[in-house]
Length: 97
Image (cartoon, rainbow, N blue to C red; front, side):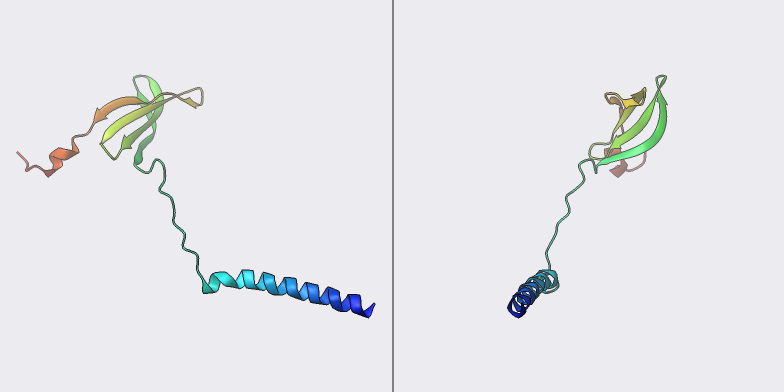
């Protein structure tokens, strides 16, 4: 009985040692992580509730090209986006007339 008790303690001590090594490793070798860019980071919600041509939905702006889109909502489902207007942000750099 004494030999199996010693073997069991040795096995448990070895397991504890290896688990401790795994737990301590990030403190000595930090892991570099990189976040992924959001898929729709360029979309800005202008109005969460908006009426356009009698339909309720929400208004969004694509910040890459300054396009304004209306996304209608029918029966709690969103439909195909409708182009509304393009804001002329390129004219902001010109001097006032």
